[in-house]
Length: 201
Length: 415
Ligand SMILES: Nc1ncnc2c1ncn2[C@@H]1O[C@H](COP(=O)(O)OP(=O)(O)OP(=O)(O)O)[C@@H](O)[C@H]1O
Ligand SMILES: [Mg+2]
Ligand SMILES: [Zn+2]
Image (cartoon, rainbow over the protein chains, first blue to last red):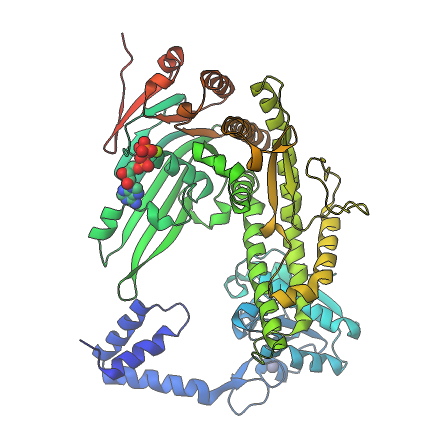
């Protein structure tokens, strides 16, 4: 028996999500089929809102409410303008904000270099970073990409690109578990990594 | 170090096996297809977390259980209790086959060190074993890949950082190859934007060289140390008639070759012991830069540890090409015994020694030699179809196990 098209379509959509296999996808789809209509309505609304009401900060590409140009961090007058912390994902901003120990600004790359996936420098937010640096206000860049081979390589690429601008470029200290993601590191580990950051050479 | 207990579930032909190990020499006797090799494979698996005979963990899970459990989860489980540095430890490996897709099964591997789940690279080398199987003459005679695998499995057991560095190196290699291929496609106009931007090649060179240099250095050191030990044993085995050499030939060779000596003759020993990590790394990058055009044209990385070679020579003759059967067996025996001592030097503990049907392959003199070399170690597990291959006084002192249909019974001492 073939599945009715709407169910199959939903299963296919779920399967494209990270970490979801065919089995979980079907389970989710059938769960929704059985669930009350209000549940699907809420979910559908949340999904449309995600795209309609959330957007990315024009300065640092962190998430922000739709209609706003800048994110909370970029807008805040309290934050240092001369330090930028470079992270892979917006979730990493959240993790660093939770520590309460960082007072500069951010730059969210939305990925790392990965030729296997066809992701080159143009595909992540490296160009806009250089533009920010060119304005001349920034004095220090903190590389907070994940401590993975790709994270290190991306950090190195950015460092080489920024060499002409005479900045202090540092990398989070190695307290982080290698291969682990920033977003999962606990607050104390992150704080230690931040305060123990070292010059990249 | 020694093994105290092994417990297997759905591993090869063992649906269930629980076995206490004495701290002795054990001879496992059984006719064909009873599971002798499988038991050695299981023990070795706990040292390397990969089989010595297959790349596919699926083949290790009992196929009857896998077939019966269609559409359900089947777990192949290996648990060992062992003693190391006077304290007790436990290792567990789970080979989890679970349904995926419409009709497929996928395999997931979990490893627990002292009951805590750990990543693979933190688990290899907790328990050490050296395995010797006659088919391992492939290390000398087979493809270079066999020798790289041999080096990797051996070094991993004494150097936990090697495992992770190697896996990162392979990742960097795949990334760099993808980029070279994208650059090649772009050059030939096949596709426009696919992440192939030549500017980034430099950082991938650096990643490859940073990781590759460590591997090269560790391989230089390991080969040198194993060669020293193996040559001594080999000298004794051949009653001084032959000199064994292990010639490591890195595909990126950090040794500056003197002008006019580009094609070094293989029987010229090369001493790489003075090389420093930083020199290797820098030289590696330089070579990659020099080869850049060619590598883009070929769309792949042409130098580095993934292409290394290791040759075995006796009296300057390459055994892989010209060795007689006997010469190869003797060299392999020397290398394996050297491995045992090498691990002892590095870890301070004797590895468990696993020998699958080796007696049948050796003449009487070599059997006596082997037994002599094993004398020093802590725990040895032999398998054989025929106990008569062992000298009587040796067999009398060993623990004899009979294996039949997946069950092991200890033979009572005679008299
Ligand atoms: N995944 C598996 N599930 C069930 N049985 C298996 C599996 N893999 C191998 N076997 C079977 O296990 C049996 C034991 O194999 P093993 O190689 O351990 O035997 P052996 O005692 O070493 O024999 P020989 O003396 O011929 O070398 C064989 O019959 C083999 O077909
Ligand atoms: Mg066998
Ligand atoms: Zn912002």
